[in-house]
Length: 248
Length: 319
Image 1 (tube, chains in turn purple, cyan):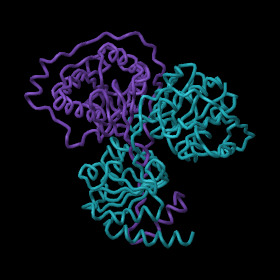
Image 2 (image 1 turned 180 degrees about the vertical axis):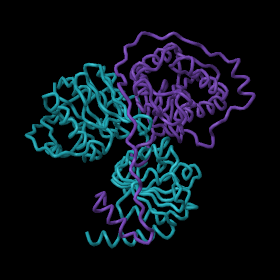
Image 3 (image 1 turned 135 degrees about the vertical axis):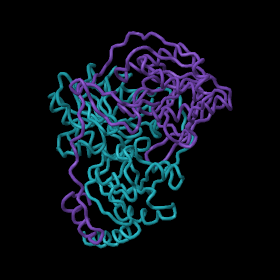
Image 4 (image 1 turned 180 degrees about the horizontal axis):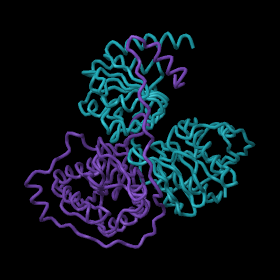
């Protein structure tokens, strides 16, 4: 089985978010970048398939050279090979078009992506790749088994979950639940050494016109101070929620 | 060239977000000087939509639509958009709408904006305000394609009544092969879901153990709220993953969010910042959550919560 894991290179979850160039660009100054958490759950599940079902795992990212340390980390965790499509990720559609080309050329059976990246929160790339390559697609995936050419997938729905079957090739939008938080792997020294020798192929992009663009960013207005209510005076809290906030 | 809105139903009954996305579609249609067409899939009573500015309803009734399938639903909505010559298509931010929308965007060759908060600030160029960086920023987002697809953030635009004259017609769509088969659905029907809840009651490690969740459930019960939890609590297995809210869990956009014994890590706050009013109950007055909350009580949850339950019962009885 050939697996492709799509890796988004995102600011660490604790990063302070600031903007530059007249508020039109994310300020990367002093920001630590990581594998997008939703993708990391998928990568870890892919490692399971590598170990139990002898799957070959390739990771891919669409971005400039600055994203290579993130791909190397995925190699150190255990992926066999990496691909970087050498173009800045401008919008969801253009990233999906680049990935669709990689998917079609590589003949992958299973493509694992995160349900959304924690930076731009577009949540559209996995579904767009599926539509562009005419593959089956399951989003919000919280469990995945493969038997031959059929996948059994557990999907989170509002208020519960759903079990579905689909034939390969299949694209999933994964999230926590695919593996547990405690299953996530920190690369060890041997993995880091081996990652240096693994192939990282740089592909030139295809021509795509982005469909959308960021014009400007704003940060939320600073929040007013919290109104503290004494724990001896819960009637006041109820009154504030009823009369002032009007939420009960 | 009307605005098409997909008004989602569950077991034939409209979800509340259906009225919010219809209200949004009406606002966009007014800006563009056009009308609103709604598409409904197996809904029983579509006439309610006339209260929210919908001029025309395309009703699709087909047994193939009984269980949700993203590819089939996207195809049917696509066919409706083509029939109407829609230039703007509006959907909600429910799990199912976010699943089908990227497929629909490719079908329509439409630029797609998710998590949209407000009516377009300009229609030429077409610019909408959306959230990004998990509620830590807003993005002014421009769509350059001829057709635009908008996913509206829940509880952001609101439901606006707008009584109109509305016509309704049956629409029969071609159903494509699905490729995906639903084997089973496991859904608690008696509980309020985090996605639909007006109020969410959430608790963290401050509760000390899973055996202490009875009072959280009771508080939720009194308020008609959904229960949720912080990430450490779901990682420890005290509560199911489906209750985990925050950056890697479920997003919350309720009217009221009550956090009990949650310190307020930045990842947690990012996931719940879409809520309008936040109340925090914590013993530690230095907990970061107090900086993000509207109302706070410094106190022990084990005394505050039971007392709050009793007082809320009295309050509810008086209403």
